[in-house]
Length: 292
Image (cartoon, rainbow, N blue to C red; front, side, top):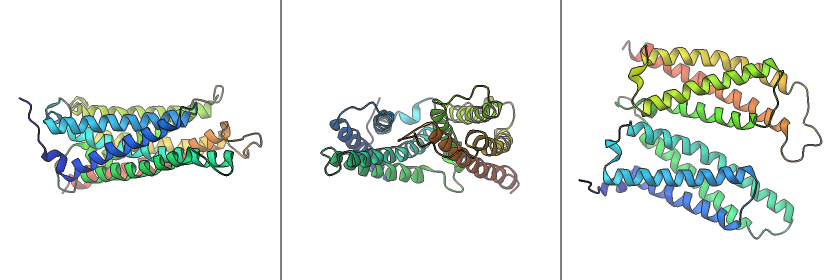
């Protein structure tokens, strides 16, 4: 028999999730009222707001009727990883919407009748970002607590690493790297590391970590060390062979292939740092926490 537990809505995490639903709903409503565009960032922003709104609302409903903990998945891992993913996605969005506002002001010089709603969407997106980051802080495993892997710092870093890899793949979509073995190696690095991070997330949420042929923590540490070494090569190879000493072409107006090269270079460095931090935490958990 399904019964409603109102207390799930009055605890701090429940209140934060209610506000997330409100602000994401306001954000996509404001932007949708402006009209449709063919810009890719408009599609990305609308998808993110709607995705975060729907899944957060679903989490609230399942928590309210008590079905979340009864699902055949690790519910705490799922909610924490989703909050981390939403934090990253919304963080990218309000940057995009801010660009849109600036472009409208630039095109229309004096006034922009739709900029008020875009500015409002930017503000509500920033508030949603703060709320999702707060939820990550509230649901993250505290020292000494028994929790799922994705609620720990290494687990959250796995979500971050996978998300950054997705941004890299999006930028790769417009590039022609055929006949360039060096760049193909970098793409192999991004793909291999992403696949492993994605499998860790899926196996954790699905409670399938017991299927690993070796102790999970040692497998994770070894793969993190390998990922650091592989990304270290990509950090050097990608900008060297894609950018070199080539300045930004003068024919580029807003976005061009050169910009994608720069974004990928930056994201490669960012992910290398993430994997280094992940490796340090993994070594600490395996060799120091276990020994004590």
